[in-house]
Image (cartoon, rainbow, N blue to C red; front, side):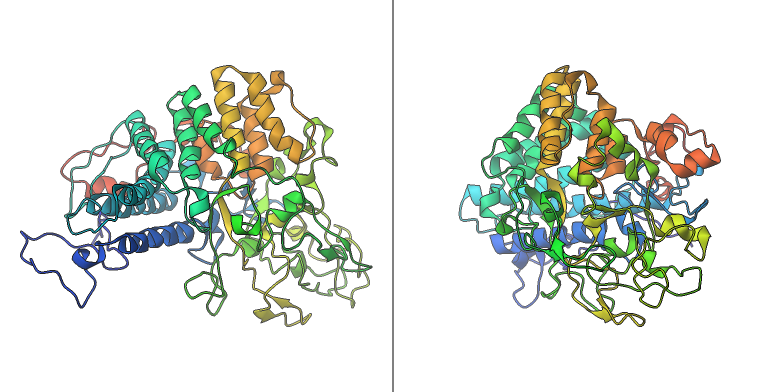
Length: 571
C-alpha cells in the first residue's frame, strides 16, 4: 500500500503540537508537556528554536555517515564528484534522467517544509494570550527569528523549484488542496519576513554561536532582493552587514593554532610554522565570535563534549566531511604491496567519497596566473602532493606517483586535491589505526561550520552592483575578498556572473550551497555541461528544465483535491 506524504504535517519532535478538537480540553496540563504549558514563556519558545537549529544542522551536515550529507554543497555538480577509478564514476543525481521520483528532490522538499512548519508554530503561538511576554520587543525578537528561518527555507524552495505552495500558518489538520504560488510571490514573502526580522532579531553581540543574528537576515535579504531584481535594495541590505562594526574580514593570523608547527605532509624533518589566515578560519576553536572571529555571521555548532552537541556516540557522529570529502591516499599500496599508513595530524581517515572536479581543483586557480599567489590555493589549504608514510615502504617519505603506486586504477581518486577545510588539525583519538597505531577520529571533524560568512556578503553585494550596471563597485567588493587572499585584483571590465561564480568557488568551496546558487542564477545546466566530468564524459545534452528541480511525485499524488502542477520538462 502506497504511503502518502503530506508536505506540511509532521510529528513535532519534542511533542508540543496538537490539534484543537473544539476545545474539548480547557484545563492547562501541568504534569506533562503540551502546547498550553510549553508555549507560555520566552524560554519555551527558545527551546523550539533550538530544536529547529538542531534540525538544520542535522539536515545540512550530519544526517548519515555518507557523502549525501553534503549534497547541497556542490557534489555531483561543478564542485565535486564520486570518482571510483581513474575513468569510472558513481552518479548521484543522474542528471540525464532526472525525474519526479528523484530522492534528492523529495528529501529536501520535505525537510524544508518541516522547517517552515515549525517556524509557523512559533509565529502563530507567539500571539496566544497564554504567553507571558515581558515586552512587545521580546515577542517580536522571537517571531523575527522564526520568520528568518521560514524565509531561509522558502528561499531554497524558490531558487530550486520556482513557485511552490505558500503556507504561513500552523497546519493543524491534513490538507490536500495546496496550490503553487508564483516564484515572485514566494520571494516577496521571504522579503516581508526578512524585513520584519531585520527590525527585531537580536544582534550578534547579544547571542551565542549557532543562533542566527540580525545580520543573517540582512545577508539573506540581499540575496532575495537580487532575485526580485531590486538591486539597490540588495546593496543596502548587504551594506548593513558590511558596514556593521561588529563584522570584518579576518586579515591576520588568529586563534588556537596561530603558532602551530608541522613537519609537512611527508611527516619527516623538523617542524616549521604552518598555516595562514585563511587556514585559521577553518580550525577548531576559531569559528565563533568568542574565538575572535569577526567574519562569521551564522554557523552551526558541534560540541562533542556536550550531550546532544553532535559527533558523539559509538562511531563519533555523522559530521564526516573529513571522511567523505578527501582523497584516500592512506589506503594505497605501493608497487611492492606495502600498505601506506594513516598519520594523525592534518590527514584524518578519509574513505574517498568525493573528489574535487577539474574546475574546482585546478581551473579556477589558474586565473590571472595566481596559482602560487592566492593563499586559498596554498599548500596549507589544498594538498596536492601525497606521500608514502609507512617506514616499511622503500618509498617512505617520497611522493606517491603513478609509477610507484600498486593499483594504478585508483590513483586519481586517491591523490585528488585535498581541501584542508575538511580536516581536523589535532584529532581527538577516539580510535586507533590497526596498522600505524596512530590515533584518529574515523573521519569525523570536531569543529563548527559556516552557514554565512562575511566574504559571501561582499560577493552578494558585488553581484548586485554588477546586475545594476556598476562594475566598478562590483570589482571593488570582489577585490576586498581577493586582497585578503593576496590574489591579483580584478578590473571592472572583467566582472561578469561567471567571474563572480568563480570567486565564490575559490572562497566558499565546501561552504556555499552551490546547487542553490547555480539554480538561483539559472546557471546549473550551463555549469553541468561545462564542468561536470560525468556529463562531459558521457556526452549528455541536458535540457534547460534542469535549472529547476521536479516537484516530488509523491507530493503531487498526495495533493488529491487540487492539481499541484509539475515543473515543465519533467514527467
